[in-house]
Image (cartoon, rainbow, N blue to C red; front, side):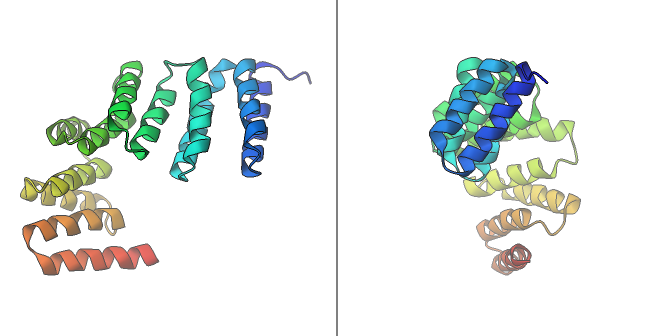
Length: 212
C-alpha cells in the first residue's frame, strides 16, 4: 500500500509520539512538520495531542506541537483553544484571552471554549465577566456540575455572593456527590462564611476521597 495524505500524516504523527517519549524532540518535531505537510488537516489531531501534553504539564512539547499546527491552520479552533490553555498555564492571561476569543469566533457556541474563557476572565480579575459566561452555560444545560462548581469557586475566591456560591456547590454535589474538587470548593465557601466546622468536614472528606 502506498501511504499518502492522511494515512502518511498519521504515520509521522505516531512516530513523533514515540520519539517524544524517548526525548528525541528534534526528530519528533521534524515528524510533526512532515505530517502537517502531508495532510494539513491533521493540525487538529496535533492540537489534541498538545492538550494531552498540557494535562501532563509538558509545556515545551505542547508548545512545539501548537506552534507547528498554528503555522499551518491559524484559524483552527482546537489549535487556538490549545494555545489559550498554554498561555493560561504560563500566567499569560491577556494572550490566553486573545486566543480563546479567536477560538470562540471560529467555533461559535462551543461550551469548551466558553468554559475556558470564563476561567481566563476570572484569573484576569473580571469576575463579573467570568460569571456571566457561566450563567449562560448553566441556563442552557442545567445538569452542568462542572460549571456549577466553577461559578461557586469563582465567587468563593472573590469572597462575594457567598450564599449563591454555596447554592452552586450544593447543586454540583447533588449531581455528582463525593467529588473532591466540589468538596474543596464548598470547603472554601464555608471558610469564607466563618462556618469552620463545616469547612473542615468538607476538606477532610475531600482528602479522604483523594487518598482512595
